Length: 216
Image (tube, rainbow, N blue to C red; front, side, top):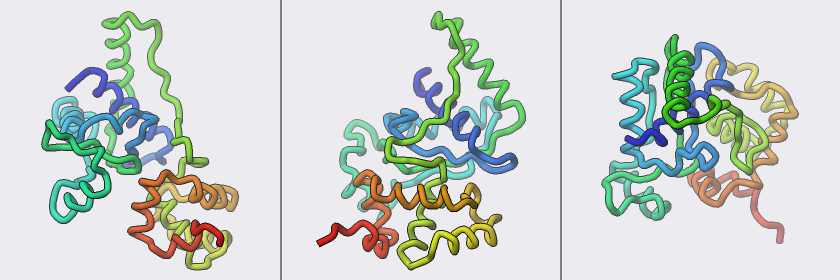
């Protein structure tokens, strides 16, 4: 477990925590922007277990598992570049995510960790946690909620109808947008999705293909 990898995981959780409502689990997405796409699944799991069992600053609530059949066959056929030839684990694809519950003292522990790293490396300042999004994203809406918006769009729901749906089911859709402008931005994001995410989306919701099909 390297110091660099540990730092990337901590910063990614801290960043995601900024956009997470209080008393909700923190969902962290794997992306090239936060550097988690370069960490193998086994090492990422070990880091989270250390933060959970040794440091006791969080609790792991979910972690992506592509290791079992038929998931393994599906994963290896679609993401061969992510498979590690030297290790039994792999790099998780962009769009994958894990969730954690952060405890009281998480922020203080992070501040102490960054302070120690600053002194040991000679850095002149503590890392500043900023909100970064993938290059295709126009919003910070969670991936699971984006999928709901695109699915309802494909089924003919208007933006107003989607807005009413989220208002009526607020407890079931954490992080959902309630304003029409954000819902429209999520719709616009669909046409900018990377091929890997688009393939996964269409495998789950084939009807969305009608929204992105090239015009003949």
